[in-house]
Length: 98
Image (cartoon, rainbow, N blue to C red; front, top):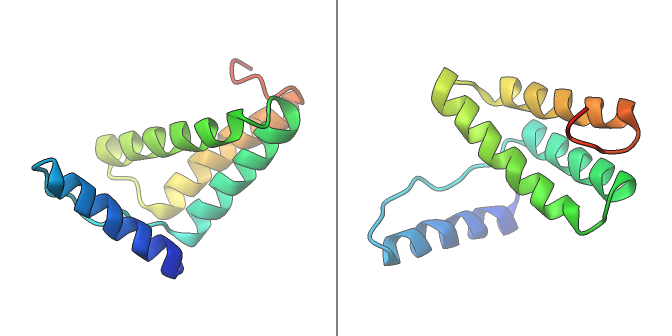
């Protein structure tokens, strides 16, 4: 994605290593990143601004679970996040239950 995210990925792996775990460097596909940013925008403008980081976090957790369950590739993950974001936009309230 860019040097900031490359360095952040290294920090995640180093932090995991300190805890006795070996993890792959988290990568961030540009299409997935764009969808997560758009999700954060929708949540920040339709709910509480402070919900945007947590919405992004839950998107990452859900995306990883989809990838683990179905072997989803980046384009599938981007479409998955976009689908939820578009539902929130259509609802207009950002209410995740809709």
